[in-house]
Image 1 (cartoon, rainbow, N blue to C red):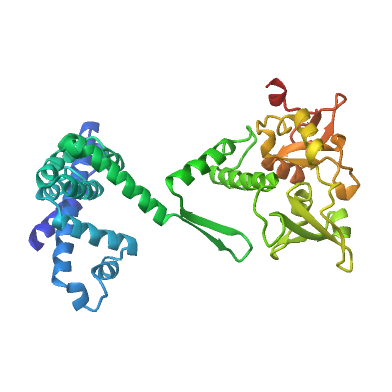
Image 2 (image 1 turned 60 degrees about the horizontal axis):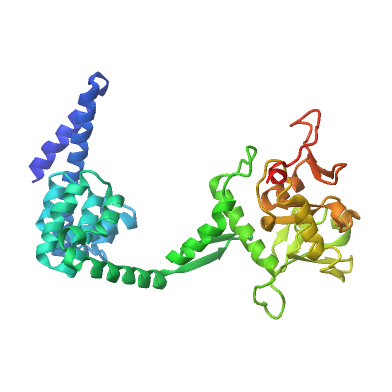
Length: 416
């Protein structure tokens, strides 16, 4: 074997030195097919070697805790890749010979072989050895047309082709097992970063995933041609918007006897001068600009302190745009009022045109609906907001965008 592998290495070296630029297109394509087929056949050799080394206990004899750990060091693999290599070698060792033969012939790749082996095992359990042997042939034929992901999806109905008499019952059992596994594995992990941000990770079951998609998908589309957020940033903002909506309903359970809400603490003098920073109730510091933006939101409870840190005002209801006043605002603006935005009212904050800390009152004439994205944009940019002569909001762009600074309006909601 060593001599044959050495000869193969020499042949590969010759291929690397070959002038590919001189080949006609059909020869290039044929060479690509041949190289891919050879790669799969070499993978079959590698798996056979791993399988034999694992069976002999070579790794533990050389002081490693497992074959995967030994492969990680020997081949300089990542731990995940080493573990998958060992697992696939073990899987193919017990798989029908047809699966190993297909990989050795280069007609399937490693991932397809993994899918076929897993699927055949399921068929064997549900319908016996004869159906499993039949499934190998069907799946290998499908592998000529479909990649591993598509092959796995098709494999969920393989019994329809090889054992239709048990297919329905097996499919129902598989669904129940899948739902049970999803319920067991569901989790969300929230890890606090040193700078106060949170890292979210987890797995949602099918039902929760559908709920999340239904909630955030309408909010993940770009808010207009000027929206430069990445898809990941739009999903982040959509999750935040859904949480704000939940806070706004007032139907969340109390937390320690208090309504579920965000508390921002800041100094009144600093806030009015637009210089004061603030802090959330769990200690994270916020910039002055963020504090002023959050102070517009009815879901925020402002705890404004004087110089002696004594509460001057906690949650002044006359500041909040809620109840009949918010309904009137919704009737007027019908959604985010920023030009070109189609966000509906339920996803919007009520923004004070003249900030309450600057003496602005809480009235229909001093309010405008803005979605989360445009609320942040207005607070940190040079756009000016005002009401036109007809009482509807208009936005004056910064001079760098429009030297004439002609007012713009959102005509989307007016039309609909």
